[in-house]
Image (cartoon, rainbow, N blue to C red):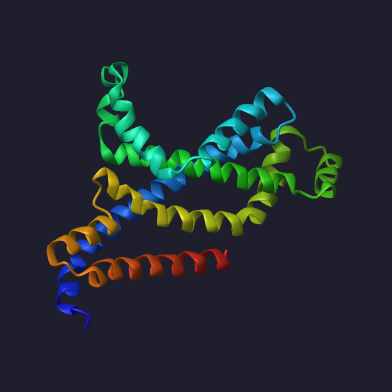
Length: 218
């Protein structure tokens, strides 16, 4: 039998953990999207010196686990005296900043490739028509290429948003009190794994359902 009193008692803590998870998710998505648009334009550039560094960045980030990236930023950078003595150390010693940095870098890499793929998929006729109207350079991207590419990228970007939302559970490994950390604490206090992690699963499922529905509307 499910111990409902324990579930109901822990709901306020789960609520605070949910707020933490959503704040982290929203900030990382905003950062990643803003950074990925110019990187995607560079990624599809015909200039190798511009495209190759972006390719190397996305290749390395997408080729390594997010958990490893979080650990390197939160635990690994602290071992270097130059980092501890730098002006960035007050930020890099904070778990929230390190989690935001790791998640933002990760989603930037994936979103860059998503948008770059959508840009490559632009029909040649759209580009030719735009150039016939005298559009080129940044105006071509702003008026034609980016709006068209972003619409095509929505399904894949929706998957990335859901994946990042699930990945926020990793934040608990660097002491942030998110939904997963609350579930671990409830389990530690009551030794009821179904009640603890089942509640977390229901919360993540509800978030996934809402996000998928929102992207379908878009």
